[in-house]
Length: 297
Ligand code: RIB
Image (tube, rainbow, N blue to C red; front, side, top):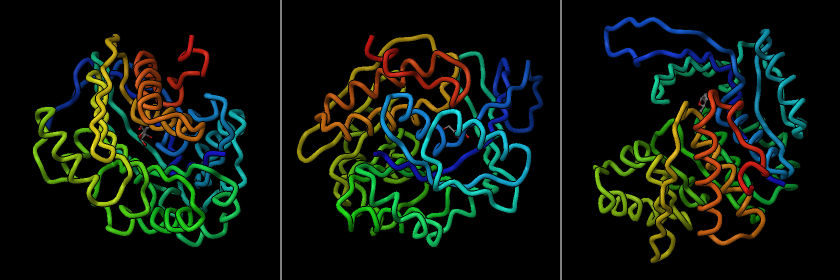
């Protein structure tokens, strides 16, 4: 089983011709309410690839909380680690422009209530899983506790440190696979990542801090991975992007499913790259996550 611990949001997705710049107002064409959140997206995505998945997280007591719970129930995830907190649900305000690029603002709400104690209450789910995934839309101390418990039990851990912020040495040590995009890599390494050479140098620095492998997703340019002394490059797949929201989530889950199956790194990366290329061709986060037969057909 794969365990995902992370955020559950209601995404307010607004289509715009052009993303608003500082001080600018723009007209939106329409608004859609689509379940999202990096934790929920990754968990749903794993399930759609046919793997068993449990999600630990919290929704709020409001109407969105009810909708989000119903959505996750319909996706048939193990929700024994899902709780309703006496607060509002997580919200993401997302602008998507004509080329599929976006800006995202999140309000944590109930996601901020995922504490280390809550992780401990759900220790059985950690024990039952083979792979554990998390991101940075829940409190840092909860992610640290999760990975410490997971590594104590020899689980495979995958960290997607998004939205990017510094990673503690302890968390680095307990992370097997670190999956970042270029922006996250630049922030974490405090280095410029304008060329493949610079990306490789920054990724090697991250690798020296503990993870078995560092995967850098490069959007339309594929991915670059540092593992041991090896650099693996994965070519980009040219598609017409409609919305890049959750492409990273899609990549992480497809990668996790392959690692859980015991596939080698190159196979896992190629598969994840294909999955992410499919997801950017549809609008929305959870609504764009492909099924297994869409990737392998
Ligand atoms: O990665 C995409 C996700 O980021 C969105 O679904 C939004 O909820 C934010 O968490």
